[in-house]
Length: 201
Ligand SMILES: Cc1cc2nc3c(=O)[nH]c(=O)nc-3n(C[C@H](O)[C@H](O)[C@H](O)COP(=O)(O)O)c2cc1C
Image (cartoon, rainbow, N blue to C red; front, side, top):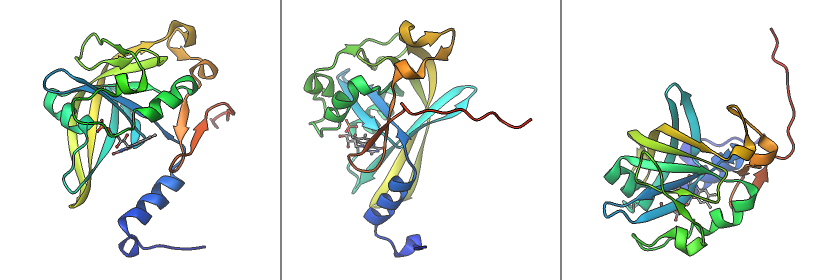
């Protein structure tokens, strides 16, 4: 079995090993607005649900040589973001929104997606997604050392939006949600092959 001490690895190789092995990763499709109210949308697969009470999610933004991405700049400026869930029917659109546009240029327009106004936060959601969350930033944690750091943005979910068609009470129909996850690089996985395990008493 090969073994790698992290100290011997380049930044890129460490990234490849980590993201190649922690799979599939859920994708948070992060909606924000800038200080002037202009919308922004981008996918983040360093994304996870990390607490249920209060419901909390996080996404982690790579910052190389101090070059901050809009999803970080905007969340810091407004203290808010949304997170839409990526189903198979919007996977291609999600990928489009990873384009690096000028600050203030909308990925919603670029990808032909509809910004759905939120209720409790200013950031819009993706109308075409079957579920989305409205979130308030609770903390930001800086990881690593310059020049390649990550800033982890924690957000408390203040509102859930779920398409009636995929909902039974508060249970989700996963076949209908049809969520996709990220493998490495340009690779993705569906959630179409599922199984159950009964926990021991
Ligand atoms: C599926 C997918 C997942 C991504 N995950 C991340 C991530 O976790 N962290 C990150 O910094 N960039 C990630 N990216 C790249 C960003 O989406 C990309 O840099 C984008 O342009 C950032 O947009 P923004 O400046 O509007 O925030 C990902 C791209 C894709 C396609």
